[in-house]
Length: 346
Image 1 (tube, rainbow, N blue to C red):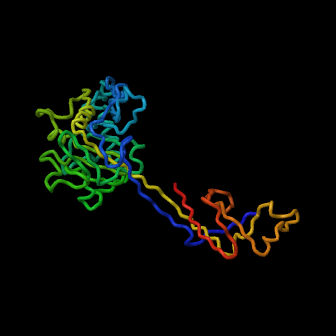
Image 2 (cartoon, helix red, strand yellow):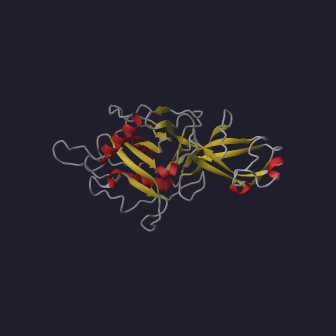
Image 3 (cartoon, helix red, strand yellow):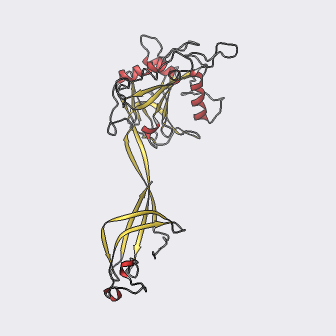
């Protein structure tokens, strides 16, 4: 019969190890996606108001039209509180203004502000009609986006979160999406000076939500800084397919620099298994006993010696939950005590 020894206070310790890896496929941490921002000709279709491409554009690190193994890295979406910039769902009475752009704006407003439809995205006191969203693929960012190393270049505009500048404290904590940091001109979590966090009359650049894995960009600030020949980046004509995500994609390709790491928290529990000198010196193996229960080998009577090879972890009902194997048998007798550390990751 097995011997069960309960764990007591001090026999277990909880630990969390934080691991950082690049969010991008096949790239080491703190490295760049560069100009590799490819879309799919089958996914990014905007000819109908309800096409998937009307709502978002998936971005791959390799050309998905040529490589069937290409993986989605992130998505670009455009939202407009007035519904401008995309086709309307219905041209009938009461259907005006309801479009993919308006749906996207409402979706992220609900996420950030917890369903408060009276709130609109405001950037340093400026409230634009339109926003861009860069939504990192869920499998890519793991537990969270790593703060302090984000670097995003849109055209010539270099952006980062301000987590280092603000001593790691978030700009706000949003109930639905967690921490909120400002998106500022700078690199490695540090803004460039004190006057480069916003555009005059257009507001700040945006926000980073590391726990939810997305970035909100202020359309008006981008229009002011990365427009071509005075032409705004986004098309905001009512009931018009503006194909705004691809315009931001073009600027990301031009900028050719997007560094983003994923944060993964690995929870571990350590169990300290203590085999005292008086314990575990006899075996329950049937080959060591006669039918009447007496020991077959006299040496096991006065000077028993066993070898610990396996540790089983059980619940209160003595159901086996986990098994730990030692790398080599550990001798045990009345003159020896052992302390074995078992680590469970989950």
